[in-house]
Image (cartoon, rainbow, N blue to C red; front, top):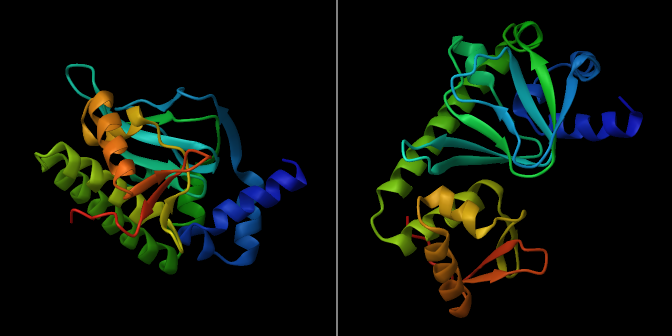
Length: 230
């Protein structure tokens, strides 16, 4: 791993509470043994029901966690970006992957083996407390998505999706809250279980009312006029 890449990847790992709980020497050792894999946009990283022995850390790019409905329609459960991780559940309970993981754009992912996960994380009391906190956070995310999908009104559902994503990743500035990555109309539609045409129409309406702004880099700004549904 090149020095610049190692420094960048270490910065990504330092954002993870599980990693920051480790002593400096343990962090350095873990950096050296993490293997790295590249994925092209739309490629599958993990299939639902796969049984893998790794925890995955996103060094660059963006991924989505999805379930495919019986009719073949994709439902986005959650979006993860640089500094996030996934796959820890299969290491903790030994069961198969509960959803499919897909690269939303070209991505570089670090792999931490089950052996190293148990060596560096499961033997550390501070890390175990972080794991409990993590599981609670992931459970709350699931509850939020169930609430979004229970909403009958399409506009309220889109507002709820934007609110949820901004609450996790949003960056506040004087204008409002910026979602700091590109979201296509189809991705928002898949997140909210609506058609792309419906989402496009609703985003246009929200833009015209001044509640959102599509910025030059395609990031979405939720202005101070944006009404949160919950």
